Image (cartoon, rainbow, N blue to C red; front, side, top):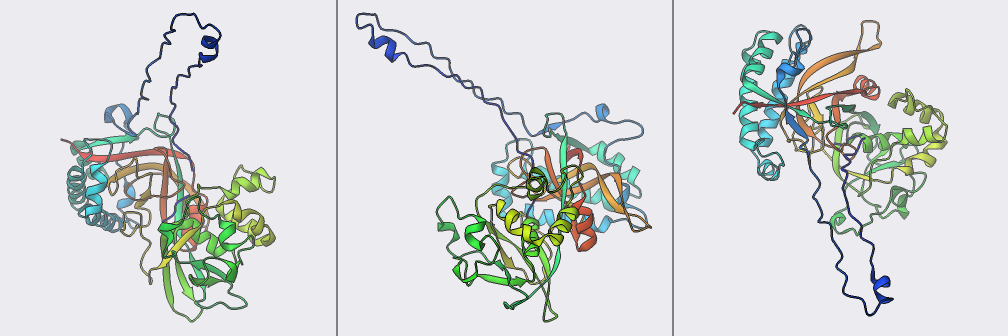
Length: 408
C-alpha cells in the first residue's frame, strides 16, 4: 500500500582541497610541492534500533507493553493473532530470507524474529489480562527502540486507511476519471519517468492522448477519488452494476512524495496549523477547479491491479490488519516483526465525536510507503471505510516505536 513524511538525514564530513597547480606553474624552478591529503573518515552510522534497559523507561504508572485494548468487550485479541499469523506466513518465504540476509543489525535475524512471534503468540493466547501479558513480555523479551527522527526516540505518526468508492467498469459521461493498471513494459521505461501531468493531463482527462490509453481499470465520477486511491494505495470498490471488487498497488513512477496540503498552505489557501485530510477533502469538494492546480504537483503516478475484493495488502504481500499493522521504512526496520507503538489516536465517543486517547499497542510491521522514510516515521493502518478515513485523516503527533525480540 501507499503510504503518506520525514527523511533520514546523515551528515557527511568532506574535506575539500584547493588545487595548487596555478601557483606551481608560476614557479618553474621551485621544488616539488607535497600536498597533504586528509584521509576521508567514513561517517558513523548509528543503527536505527537500539536495545534499551526497561528499568530506565518504566515508571509504576507507565511501563511498556500494557496493551489494555486486547481485553474487554471491545478487545481485539483475534485481530492481533491474525496479524501475527500473516507475518509468520511471510517469514516462511524466500522473500523474507533475502530481506534478512541484508538486514543491517546483525542480532536481528530471521530465525529470532520467527521465534519471537511464535512465543509472543503463545503468551497472548494464554494470558488472562493485560498485566499478565506485560509481565511475561518483560520477563522474556528485549525491547529495541527506534532512534527516531532526532536520535532520542521521537517518531512522527500518521495513519492510512482503505477507502470505499463507487466506480464504473466503462467510461460514461459521468464516470470519466480513470484508474490505470501497470503498463506491461514499465520496467523498460527510461528515467526520469513521465510526470503525473504527462500521463493524465492537468485536468486528469488526457484520455486517448495519454500513453496509458487502454490500461484503464475503472472510471470514477470525480477526480479526487482516484487521486485518494493513489495516496492510500488500495481501495474497496462498489461498482455501478451492484457488484464489488477492489484494487491494490502495482507500481509507481520514481518521484518523491509531495504534500498537497502543504502546497495549499504555502499559497495561503488553507492554514497549515490544524490542517487534516478531512479539511483538505472538504476544500477540494468546495473548490473542484483547484484540483487542476494542485494535484499535478505530486509528480508521482501510481498503478494498480484489480484484487477482486481481497483485503488490503502490505509491502510484504500479506493482508494488513486494522489497528494491528504499521508501515515503516523497510531499509531500516525488520519486515514482519513484532513492534509496540505508543501514540495518541482518535477514537469515537458515544456522542459521535472523535476523542484523542494515548495507547500502547502491539502491532506487526507489514507495510511501507514512498513517504515513509527514516527511523522517525510510522504509518498506522486504521482499516476500511468512512470512519477509518475520518480517524486516519486527523491522526498525527509524536510517539515511540519499539521492536520486541526474545532474549538470547
